[in-house]
Length: 394
Image (cartoon, rainbow, N blue to C red; front, side):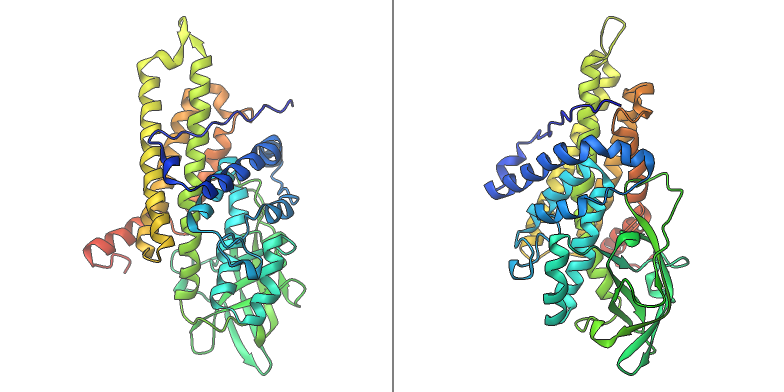
């Protein structure tokens, strides 16, 4: 199949580029160029084959997409959160699975080691994760415990110099290829504890999840722990309780809030280009009222979402952000992206379901993104509890 050129042009209806620094724009443009050069030409083929393009791990490391906000001394980029958001926007514009790989590595593996780890752990793992020499994954969700992680069954028992880890995690991005896993388990007192589990530890396996219709170019698997001996020096000393994994998820959800806008932009750009070129009844379909309504609503929702995440990025940089604010942005960006992808698919008619265009792949990917790291409904309830003070979860 001949590879179509990636003609993407980023919509900026409210001149938001004027709010960005030169560094922000340089970071964004570098990742955009990378996606056009390395991701767009191959991604449809990998998604059709349900295969993870392993070569991207080193590429993303070299580009600085792993842990860009981690300090330079640990191999990170030392960048701000708007730079991080723009990186995720551009990666997800290419494919949600590519952004997932970077999000997991940066927010769910490197962040907890940086925030909660010992100096020895930071120096040992972070530079290798930043460069892509190591790939990591994050073990929180269990077969029977998704939205309610506090009910997890995975546990550790004290055994002298090490702990014995038993349990299972599922829906774990990067698991089949990960060198390490940041795993959350309950100790004998029932307190949630984080620990770094390394591939090769006896009793630790990572079966691949097959049969996905979504995130097909992303590697998903399980983490299975059968009496795994984990040295106590692999326990994250800086946090105990559910606030540990939830703090990581706040950072990752922030990245999703930016990333899914990239999907929305790509679908809008594709639909706009197609509508100008596709002639029916003697004129481009872009000249018909119903198609203009769809395009006008798309660009309006993209613009609103861009303003929301830009402000969220400012609050993140200033250390003022709340997890509830991040929840609102994650849910909003996912919802507008899903709606835009569906409308864009309709505008392309039958062509919209083929791999010649990115839209159907984006649509299927978004069904995962709208679910993971807090479902649409859970984030609504987080906002609801924040504004009413009343807990609807129990």
